[in-house]
Amino acid sequence: MFAALSINEWATLAGLGVLGVVAAGVATYLTLGLFESRSLVRRELAAYFSSPIAYVVFVVFLAVTGSLFAETVNKLTAKGSVGVEHPLEAMFDDNYFWLVFLAIPPLLTMRSFAEERASGTLEMLMTAPLRDWQVVLSKYVACFILYVLIWVPTLAYLPLLLGLQVTACHPGTLTFYSILWEAGLASALVGLLLLVPRVGGALRVVSLGLLLGGTVVACVAGKLHYLKDPADKHLVEITAGIDPSAALTLYVGFLLAGAMFLALGLLVSSLVRDQLVAALIALALSLLFVVERFWRVDPDAGGAFDRFVYFFSVPLHFKKSSCLGLLDTRNVVLYASVAVFCLFLTVRSLESRRWR
Image (cartoon, rainbow, N blue to C red; front, side):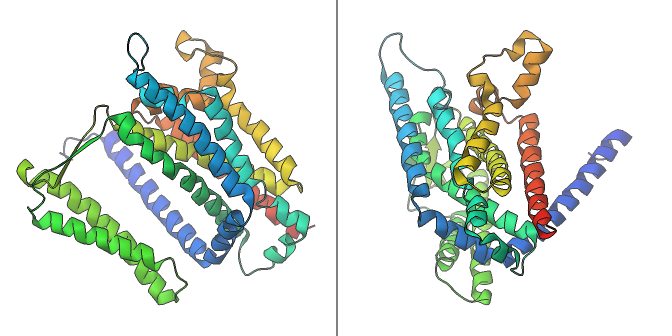
């Protein structure tokens, strides 16, 4: 297999290997730094739920997505010429949805640094035994965790939109891989429950090990169970009327796009003192990425300007790729590069305050 590779292919594999090692090293370094500042992450999450911001965002977002879900279901069950070919696209390709979606990151990030500056607690935070990038990363992770929690209830829509059917097959039949799968799930659940109370550092490491190890074991054992064992020994059969890859790429796209908008809002919050001003500026900058919703472009027309606008139009990315089960690497590069650049500028913004 490898003997047939050309020099260019070997160079590509070597380059990818080096990038993978560097990325793993950076991820490990950031994870260790984030673990040192975990108390700040808990403080930020608690601040969200002690104010009405989180609850207002939850209610508004779920109300809008719920109404769009009901409308999509009505189209799926309608008789005659009324119907829908792609339920996920019909639900999320809506102007009201994108307006609410854009408002979420500014509302979550507007208080991150603006409130600290207005109340005078930012100076006290900067004297903590943490580096500037740890402070920024902790606030960013807290925002992102809350953003992910907002999307979790929408998973209840997928069984009906995808036409999922779950069939139990020989529930009394157990195999080695099925037992290993159940053990992995139990281990991950125990590790998750141990993370809730305040415990010592050693027990915290054990709980994280149980959670991560159990998740890996459950995923590997579940995959091997469905590949190695005969079909009559499967415990559960899940079939979908629509390709489920569209749901996977859709949610991955929303997580990546949300990460970009959260980083942009965090940068704005570090530059201004008023929370409302931070939210409005972040919303105005975010509108640049959804200009397609209000000014229709046709990237298939061949025009250079239309193609340029397409690269920055997040709704078009979902319509042309994510809603159809495709994950365009160009979109991923855009979201990741903008997020990293905004976080870098946020760190520089904090560092500049030390020299004033």
